[in-house]
Image (cartoon, rainbow, N blue to C red; front, top):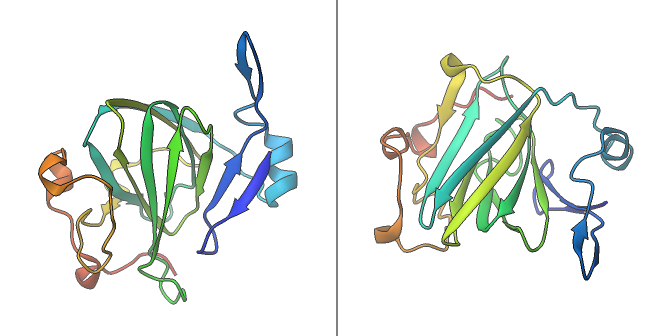
Length: 184
């Protein structure tokens, strides 16, 4: 695997070695020993999640408050998404900035989103199957989120606003300017 740094300290891209021939392809989607050796992170992933969504769906920008914060390793097994991580660490030099990465079943890339980042994605293909590993269990009482369309973040989701599909919950999150981060 190759680790690719992003413009913000913390999140990074994982590019696996893919072995392909006329029969198809093979790659290790995760290897704890190699991940720790390459990144220096000793994570214990405890929960895997999967979602299937159609074009235009935006999920996010979600996080869990400490002590239930979650680091995630995300990937797409079918389709194509724009994956986004927003820095919400108080005092960070990149507070309020984001990293966006295209993940697809073609590029096999994965994106590591550490604690202290709000996370979301937009589906760019007809459908997408999105999987992610979490280093903490889901705790509904610790949920938090930012507005996906916050003008101060100015995220280009690569979807026209009239095509965006949201859950009822994702329609009413606060903007960054009205947000008190729980992350130091």
